[in-house]
Length: 362
Image 1 (cartoon, rainbow, N blue to C red):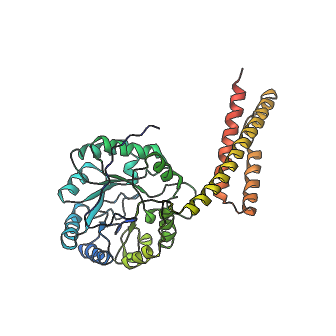
Image 2: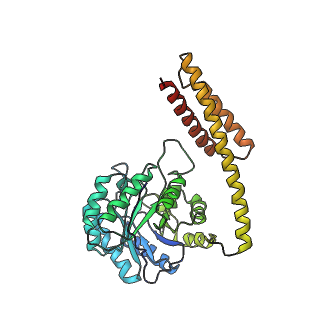
Image 3: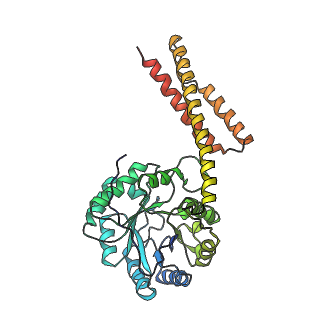
């Protein structure tokens, strides 16, 4: 994939450039008192960037959809009285104009907006000539190209201060998380655009405050750039997403508890040991490639036999037997069930591809 973005690292006066960058504030701005109380507490703990939702894209129409532009003066007050930078989500051109007019410092595009190229393009066009940071949440579904497309549209409109927000992905099956993190997607984004900052939104990934630390720590261990965490002065009484918000005090405790590790290795002994282990991993990876080659050769033979005897490629009972067997083996070997399912689904799909090619050969 050929990706070319012109990016400028954005910095904020008075905000440390050391990781992690923290953006915090309520899911929704509800009242002026709630906005100011939360902001004062966050500022007392050294938080400089205040996030609050004004326009809330809710799934059902009878839920709290935000106060809208009525909350913009509240955020302006946060900025003027506390010296904090303000950030909010925009979903259409009118939101953009209202936010810019009110002096909002940072805007972000939500997951539903990122999934709609028409909406992204309209927002990008409305931002031409504007110099402010724009953050883009991952699309609802795990589609890295759609995510990248949003950055490209904004970049072509002249927006160079860009960052990604990893907020997890919707999946049909029930999991521990509200939105499955699928870390491989933001990792792939980081591989393709290494200079693009990535913030993780553990609030929307977890859907529960009990899981926030685990996800936040993993984001730091992956060398992501920061966190955007929903924080409320009285989270249990919040009008939206109460269960995933925490108090400013608990946010401070979470930040202090995190272990921040170095991305670079200066110690030659440590580097040598790591290189030895990486070499060992490389040898196993080479063996895996050989095994895959031999396995697919057998799959082709199976395809030839099925073709000769007019048998369908997919044998559902056999596939179900393989998967159940491998899940049982995984438990005994200390391997994650989700990992094994992904691996063997990929192997099975590749086997079907090889058999299909055999079936189609003259």
